[in-house]
Image (cartoon, rainbow, N blue to C red; front, side, top):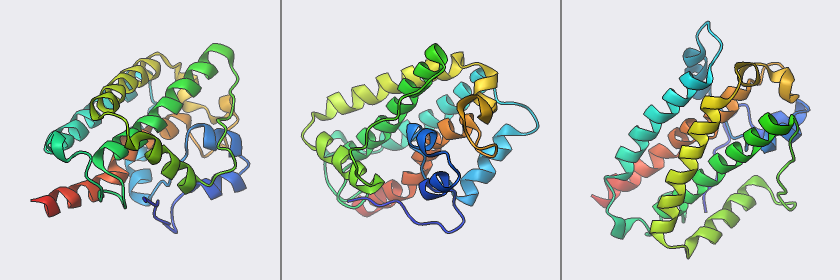
Length: 209
């Protein structure tokens, strides 16, 4: 089973709970933001507010790079365990898709109603929940998992591109602490999430020859 690393300098889910952002932190599936990822996000932001069009372009570029990595793996090997703990490539893809789907659903709800509903984690820890997601995808057909991943990402791009600039950049609009910027939460659960799992995937590809 896969476990998220405990980076001492990272802004973790526990940090979010302490900051009083529990609802929105889980809403966006807040993961570990390592110093390297935080630095990259700040570099992307620069001195200008993030726009939906700009963020969508970044997501598309990073998704293209991620898909090129997946393209190195034959379909016949995508269900072999061992990429992240016991997870296969298929289960890893399903894991990433679930978090992007939560962003799509939550952002759409915020833009349409100005409110949000916290997903129900049923009392499970984050790692327990991730293991449940992997178990759910274990018996799903590979083609279905890959197709869903592409469909959800297309929806994510559409939502991000249409998202008003103030919602992307102003934490107060969504009840976030002032140092937690909404667009960074989206990035952390999409392309930065790919980067989190990329080293393990590349190491598995190398071991497989």
